Length: 115
Length: 114
Image (cartoon, rainbow over all chains, first blue to last red; front, top):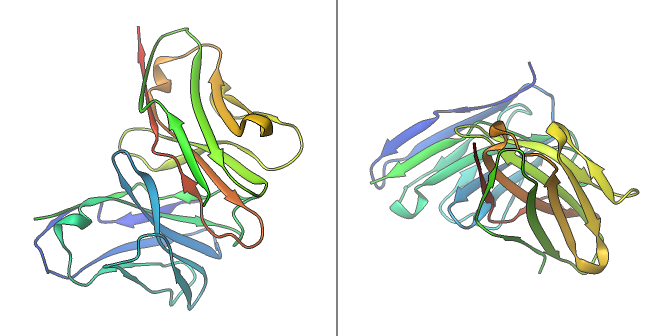
């Protein structure tokens, strides 16, 4: 089954404790992206990757890191999480780099709480 | 800067009634428009998209949307609401020329009452 898998689904952590949210897709997609969803703000892009070893900042990259060492995986790293990073996070992938003619496939989300 | 505005963060309809969810965009270049749906505890799923051509676009589950350039709108409709339509709906836009992100509206939560 074609899917984007995120882990964990739920995470509660303390301020400053490094964490990684994993994202894996099995569709051989070039493009992958991370979004955060906050009430009243919709989804905002954190980072994106157009292919292996090619990543770039989105609209809200502060406090986050990513890597793309393999085509299927795109982990999101919070080196020193803070309470303002409490949010619902989504990983997405699509077959082509330009999104206008393609569908983005989303993972089920990771609900992160930083206390 | 490009943006998307969804009017109404919450919309409530009766089962069988018309569903109308509003979306307006701001853009200086031709947009490509999408509606996504998010069911509880799930990721986003594509409902429909407008790229070029016919301005009335049909999607899954009986939804459709019409691109109106003069009004910069892309409203989502369904003639008859079903209980299973209760979800959050997001309008999103992207552009040509190597643009690599979707810009989302704030979302509209649809409630359907018996």
